[in-house]
Length: 363
Image (tube, rainbow, N blue to C red):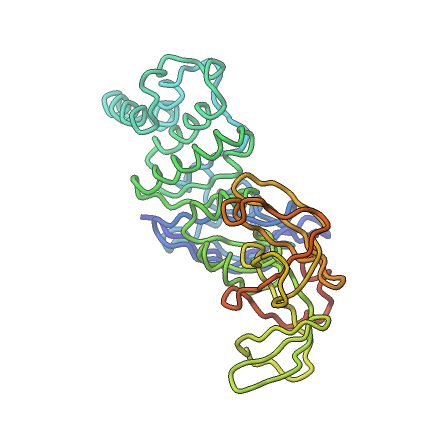
């Protein structure tokens, strides 16, 4: 079964480094999602894996064998695009059978595999339908099924759900994940949808400017990011700039514009500039008391199960998300409130040498 090793792969177009010394190991049967800003190299990476593009340098190994010089059709890799590339003149059944027919699969085997695939993607009742008679989600299921029917076990998905409506996209991503698990597939899934990546991936790869910034489990990426870029890019976070004002044994105190935060020391020094990252859901909000950080509600946004608040705390904007069931009446713009930061959910970073804005910007 396929595992994938990418070692020092670069792709250069003139003066543009689309990929810059990218290395990644993917285990057999892993579902890996790749996310990052537009133009970061996500699609270029999987195009190099597939053979559509040839790396300028570096090596790609599938099951320990280099694919350098191997033709696309001989790489035994399935590729599903965002643009649903079904043959409009073929039925669902015939689209599923197409790859098998090209490989001159015996008729009996082709019928068996195609019928199995119709069952796997729950399309038996639409086997005689043409693509223009199907919804976008159903068409994409057929496109995925056609790739799987060829028998390959390494799949590259390039924004496969990007053109679909939000509800259909949410449903189909879980079907894709279940299908991959049931069939023991190894999948590299490129997406712009962070929620999609966090909800279905075994591991998430963060890319920026042609490089891999961080790789980790979804919970690690979200709750314990290793870089400021990841903390800021994935989901929403508060980045609070401060200075270490006190060190006691295993703890340190950070001064943030007159407000003090105590947390576990991570080899910081007195006077060092730092940045604390804390997610909005870890900023507790209560009616004004003498405790906590006192601020004024500047903005309220209803998000269904959550209310999102922007609070001005002495010139610092802090975002808090509070369940609509926790404080039923909510807060209004202009009201005073007290903030409490959950220490366990804070991540402490060194202040970037080139500045915070440059460190977290998407370009």
